[in-house]
Image 1 (cartoon, rainbow, N blue to C red):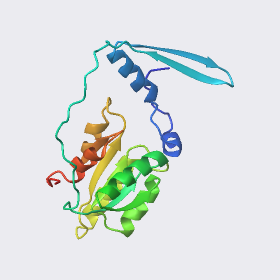
Image 2: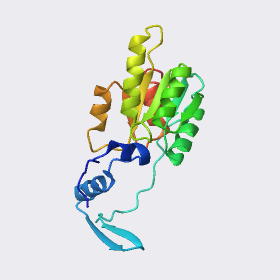
Image 3: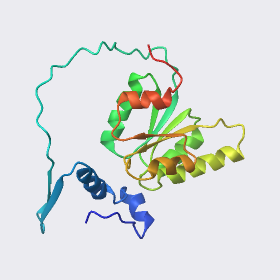
Length: 203
C-alpha cells in the first residue's frame, strides 16, 4: 500500500494527474519522525489513516521581535508569466502570490493548453507543474526547448518546475530535462521571489 509504483499506462497520469507517490511520501515522513501509521478500510464507506508521532513537551517560549521589516516589491522587474497548473487551490495561491509581486499572469490548466499558449505568446517565465492532465510538464518543456532551437529569434523562456515530490528525484530530473529551477510545494511568496528574482533585492 505504501510502496512506490509506476503506472503501466502513462495516459492514466496524464488524464487524472498524480504519480502514485503520495502514500509513499507520507510513510517516509512518518518514519523519519519515528512515528507509526495505521490503516482501516471499509468497502463502500472509505479509508481512514491514523498517524501517531511523539513530540517532546517544551516550556512556553515567548516570541521575540525578529526586527524584520515589511518587504516592498515595487522596484522588482515585472514579468509576463504563464502558470501551468491543474489544481484549482494551487492556481489561486500562486496567482495571488504573483499578483503581489506585480506580474502579468496567464493560466493554463493542462499541458496541451500550456503548449498552445506558449506558441501564441512570448513569456518571460513559465511556472510548470510536473504532473498535469493531457500532457505532463516534462513533455511540454521538451516541446518548448525544441521550438526554441528551431526558432532562434524567439527568446529563451525560463521554465520553473512546481513539484511536490521533494523526497524523490524530481528536482534533479527537472533540471536535466531542460528546466531552469524548481519550487517545492507547498511554497511561500519568498520561495517564488527567490526563483523569479534571484538577483533582484527587494526593499
